[in-house]
Image (cartoon, rainbow, N blue to C red; front, side, top):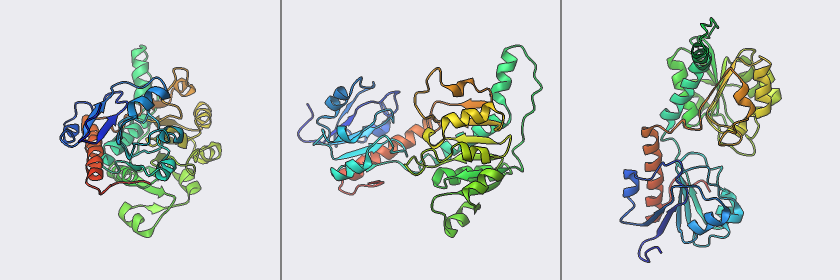
Length: 322
């Protein structure tokens, strides 16, 4: 049982391992009783049992979700922090109604994720995965690839990661345009790119890179109509959330040859099923939602989560989203 002198902090599912053994976590040892589980619970009942006495939960992995029916059964819970920017694993509105503070870690890994987005763009444009497979199969293929210098990059979502992706695009000689739900002149000036309407961005960009959070407003924002607007042979990159794109429509656009390729770090259902139709598309580069999972990225996220807990314990919550 947790000590009565320190608030109980529970990490209910650190799988794959992220914060276990982190020096960042050690900063909490003198202030909190920490209980860490290194596997995913196999039922809601086990999840509830793990979090039953927690005042604070560190949700180190998005695979652990916190719907309203779970939160309502945890009367001791006062705060949840993610080890990520995304908060779609938590019913934020119910948490607010219950007085549970929800915090995330915005901005710290912007360079890490933007670098991954750029890597996906380059890998798709240069057909690196496809050509590697051809060589392994003993075929010396002469398939053409694409140069990004001088091409147009359309950035959807201009928060910290989207802005950094725009900067990296300009650094390799791309022309950058952007779209966001709430454009301002000040943001356009800091971004160094013009805001255009979404349809215009889709129809005039050689590469479209998505950097939005998942909300009801952004869910399936890119569907069949939007994919059809994209230029023939253009590329789609998504390091945000899989459900922002209609997966079936994307597969059809790739199979038809309308899109030249896609680089995806996120999927509508994760982990990606072995029979997911996107795996049958040759012109894709796929990574397992690990854009920020370099050692440097994980340390930044772990540091941010621990900082959130420390701020809460001091009575001054930070990065609160509700």
